[in-house]
Image (cartoon, rainbow, N blue to C red; front, side):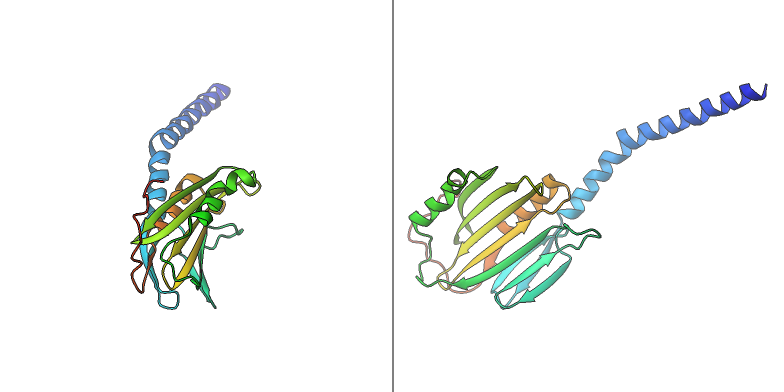
Length: 200
């Protein structure tokens, strides 16, 4: 009799655990993942007078800010490292041109093929009225995505590099993309000579 009672207890407890597991996997976990993603993609304002930029940074990246001569680093610390980050630097535009040269853009566009880079993608676009180029490159060794934006103003060229870190690559690639596309350069207008193809 005792054996039958124990067996019945084990079956009841096992069934309860199985039902709880099913609820966790089917009902609660997908919603939890979506809530985590939504929280990571919430956009927070950031401005740096020294670099002359305004932008919005995804909350999943925006943790601490390090300021150093000529640049900043925005990052979300992780217990074991490898968190997402954005590094932004600025250098003078020696040509005073509001646009990148066709030769330079061609070099960026073909760099993936020339250097046999994996998952390399290039886009020429405008960001808040400035000529810009964006590059997405996947790094197989670290299994991270790096998104780079170069933005040109008559007085300076700003480079922003966002690394997804070791988190959810789909979420943090989107966080990087949204953050870099929000960058606005303060200062004189660019007065672009000809319209830049938004979808090139």
